[in-house]
Length: 73
Image (cartoon, rainbow, N blue to C red; front, side):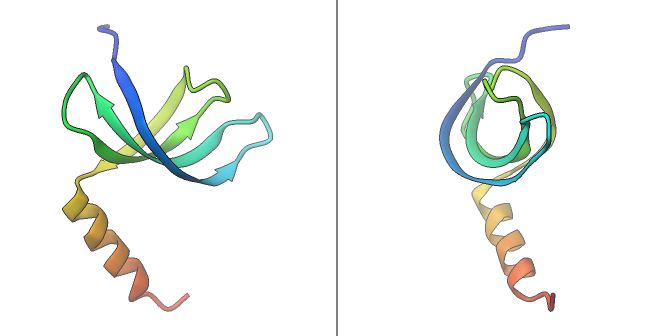
């Protein structure tokens, strides 16, 4: 399997932390030298290992924000 290259451009915050120290974060990440996207996934404390996640363009993140703001929680 090919190596995945990534660069965390900006960290916006931690959503949660597991007992093993992995943190679910919202970051802006460039994957394989491509344009950066917003990304939510779990990371180990050293940011060397990662779990499965989901990426968003700026437009998708705005739409998600609007959907979340419209929810009654």
